[in-house]
Length: 387
Image 1 (cartoon, one colour):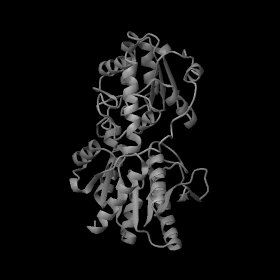
Image 2: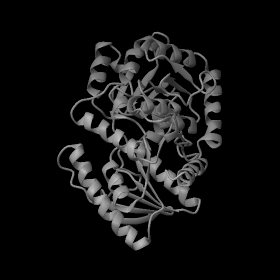
Image 3: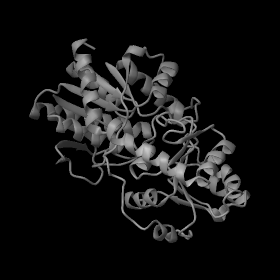
Image 4: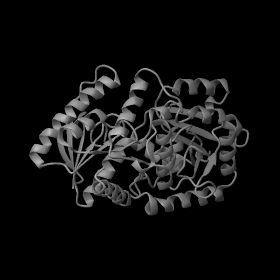
């Protein structure tokens, strides 16, 4: 099949967050299965065209002035123009597949202009990003575009059953229109052989001190404030414990202020945006990963921790973890998060057992080749049922 992937980000264009590796890596896996895959995305500092790891990258220039809606409107116009040109050059596409709300106007235009139904992967919702609340203004329009995309799509793909239920509830989507296909990771992508003590020392942390790592947007959805509130309870159990917060976002200054108010600022490091190299180092050097999300559509950071064979403490919002089997799940409360972290820091054998159990699931459940086959099956099902 000739497949057109539409996304505002990828690993080889502008990279914003977790959608980028998903788009590039599923595209590469589909290409390995013999399909011709074109990723339509923003150009950034790349050339307008490349072929990377078997995937064609069709990049467009976008004026970044104005709000996010204005930027995405211009991007969608450019994507439609590029799609038309590519189709004339390469031939008609068999499948059009978009990711999140950003390319929805382009997807709908392509459907109308060329009679090409599209698939939509919803990686998250504006409702979830707002802390399980509906927003206003721009946020409200983003929610509308999410609904529009889900309504117009032939099939909607989500990464967890929890996300499946969320879309049914907030957009009244019929159950038979949704398919659950997890995100994946390239096995060994995060694993590094390094001296964890030396990495800790770079951040002023004793080599033997237990290091708890948060990695994600500093937003209400991801819950970094919940971990900050848990820190005093953890320090009462392990006074040498240290906490690194990787990521940028609107809650960063509030979390830094709260750490000072609680008297735990010395135990916390707030790094802001970090490079992929720095992230890889810290994931491999930490003693455990904490994912304190209030809402979590999937949790790729859990796969990254497991790939590095690290134990994970998360909240019950993270549905891919099997509690007490390959991680610990806390209530969405600082006290519960602290209890789970204290339990593991006091039990190194359990930390090792959970980390190994999580690592063993990477190849069996979360390989991109397996996920590409499931995605291909959805394409075929929709074609057979004229969806």
